[in-house]
Length: 412
Image (cartoon, rainbow, N blue to C red; front, side, top):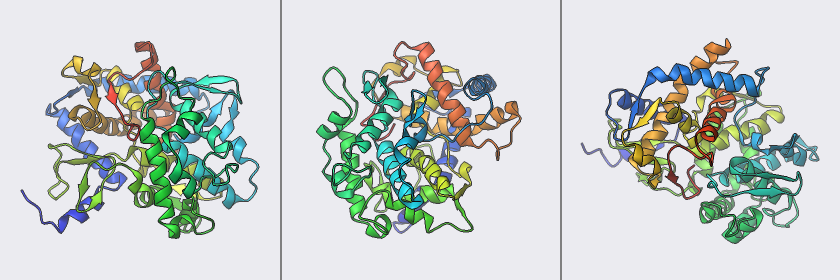
């Protein structure tokens, strides 16, 4: 059925929300339960055992159940030290500290796509070696500390002009990349930071209200939306998608609107011009989760955190594959070069979002906690992400995901 051209921009805007991610992921799970998916079968009878494992991991990691939100800040903790808070500690003014924290979080999240199984970062400050998300976080933190993202080459800040001029070689130097220490998606990461600089420079109303153009200007933009000391998490995501959305490579454009992390899947129906599309906005949501703490540290209460969704990446997704909730129709496809736009990966990601929503109440029931006390952000951190990593380490020598995905550094 053809839809009116005028309907396309409205339909596109409807996809730029967490609720659209959640609703269409549920449609994917329904297709799975009806045995209509091309790559996966779904066994919900395996979900209780998966919840048992997640609770076991939560109690091991956080015996007091005092779990912070899933955020980039967790990956700055190393060697018993909270390096992220250490580098911000010298900034006394709450607004200046908030801008610096936003600079650090935004740049670090954009550098946080999958690193590959062979890359390592050796940190002189702690004497430790890191890989995967922790390595990417510490490397980006050390670059920021050294002034790599600042116009003056000295300050702990990110400036639009400097970001725009960053090259893959700059990232390679900061991340200790070599032929013997390869990093997946190097060009994609550098391109993201360059586009970040361009987008920030082009929008001074949002990013330069109290300073020269910098990603941290988004802090002031969000503070201006606070009512009675509170800000819904969905407003954080709305701002990230509206003002940082243009930095993402957009494979799909609808009604002139680039949709970012949104993909074709023909069986997803909506009855409008967005038919056949499913959004995820994974890195945008990961960033939104990571902006909550700087706002709270500035005295703002962030509400409706469960308005965001679980993150469709390979640790959460791997949990459900390794536990048998999801099974590939063709087991050999796990080792294939699966592209991010393939039906297999799109199904896997959609199912992951929906299954995270399904497992969260099971985890809460086992812990005797309410959704208010134990939002999805704590389930993820405690939690599903850690359980997925544990299973990966137990099942595979390199600790990699159960399904191979070819990433350009801008999706996972």
